[in-house]
Image (tube, rainbow, N blue to C red; front, side):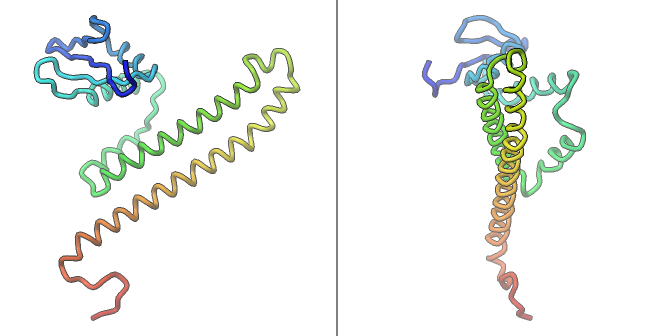
Length: 183
């Protein structure tokens, strides 16, 4: 299967999911496993061919959130809800997506650094583990600082986009430009 092709999963009226690549029925847990394995998927209604991918992924997130260790706090969830219908709704989705990408890159760097120490750093060489941990604190701080700076820059860019949209919206009404002292 080419990298650009998505694995098609059909959802039937009886709420069953059918994986067309393996020609068998699968569960939400199987869909979650495909996502964890970085398999590109698309889930469609078997009759109407409507794209149901987002709703099924949200269902998986809902099940994960109702488990033992939720990722989203009450405050985060209420803030997300408040952005729906808000002027910044479209920008917020982009902001969150870019932040997730940055966070994933940071996580991958940490995993690469951990691989250099080996599978069992404490078992054979305690000194080596100690040296690794001395290195990790500043490296982690640098990565977090970089992440926060990039996140801040994205937020400032998002604000600028909103301001530009507002300026474009109001230019047709003949208002003086911001900062002018016309009376």
